[in-house]
Length: 433
Ligand SMILES: Cc1cc2nc3c(=O)[nH]c(=O)nc-3n(C[C@H](O)[C@H](O)[C@H](O)COP(=O)(O)OP(=O)(O)OC[C@H]3O[C@@H](n4cnc5c(N)ncnc54)[C@H](O)[C@@H]3O)c2cc1C
Image 1 (cartoon, rainbow, N blue to C red):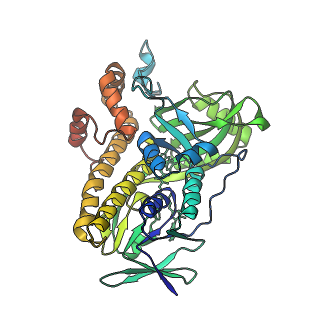
Image 2: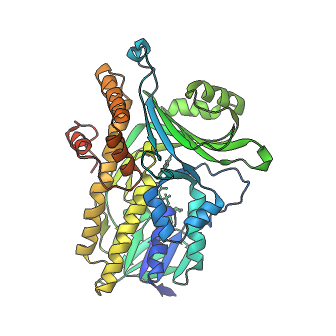
Image 3: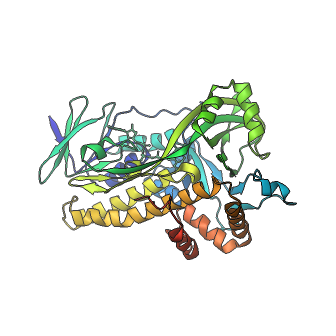
């Protein structure tokens, strides 16, 4: 038997589960479908290897959805400072009498209590799934993926791997970077694979939870520290953190093959002295990184959000923050359409969504690419330019704070001179569609 809904959301990752909750809270009937099963969390477990830096903008959205307190009750680590600098490995840097400049963004300068939170993906997802299960207008189908789509002028039908069929007026594809929805609806995608990959490690260290996240840029890629919560009574005086090491895939595969002791020794030697004393490594995984942009955000009765529409280099941890902004924007427009009695798949409505989100997502892609290319290059003029940039950023609190507000999701745009600079940057990083 086919069940009928207002909206079908395919993919109950962080973004899909968020928009499903947002729409359901306004009374829309939702089918929420995920091929995976319910995310699990139990205090005292080792952390999920996948963590995200959630911006103040994402916090505000998750609060509106009624899940922020549940996230805080499980585990979320606020960070009040964010530091970036270039590792002094360039030959010219070694001749300098002073270390390269560090740019430090601080909550105090912005007169706010924190810049963001580091949250395990399973925590955010679990809070959203639990909320979805409490919403009478959401029917959650888990453990079966989407197999095919069919439709007519007024509705779309999705058939799941287990034979279930569901019908709605609009299908929202939130099924991640390899989106089957995107593929089934014939929406093309531009993809550029970066040479670097990211190795993520869940580690324990001696000390209390830190309130700083930092990133040191090496020519082979950044090395980053993201603080997590206390390791609890089982490991008195210790805390968790997530480390990210971007590098050539062959380097990362050697690192993954090391014993725990050898890995700790190698990381302690390669990371900046700010890295606390590591005591354990409980998980390591590497991820290919690619910039992807769907050629269109909608087609017929299908619309894409989150990683299904775009992926960016994770070096500044903005992927899911952009996805939440897509979700909020689309949910607002769909709500407006219902109030006006309009078809939610009206192309002029969905075009407003794409017109609002594509430039914002593309802007963030360009910023990430500019960082990637500037810092992966050992040429001396570029070395001088980026250190001048970091020095200026530190010396000009107003500009620094404006960049921080953009990264935190408070401001939609970068300061005008930075936007102009990005527009003028030469290829290769202008290709993002
Ligand atoms: C190393 C690394 C670090 C990152 N760090 C950050 C960070 O600090 N901050 C940040 O904002 N972002 C970060 N990101 C990016 C972030 O993880 C993604 O942007 C985010 O997970 C995208 O969420 P999503 O819900 O759109 O997609 P996904 O998280 O990919 O969720 C997709 C969901 O769809 C389901 N699904 C897939 N196919 C089907 C199907 N055929 N049928 C039904 N269901 C399906 C999956 O089971 C999954 O639940 C990072 C990414 C990487 C690789």
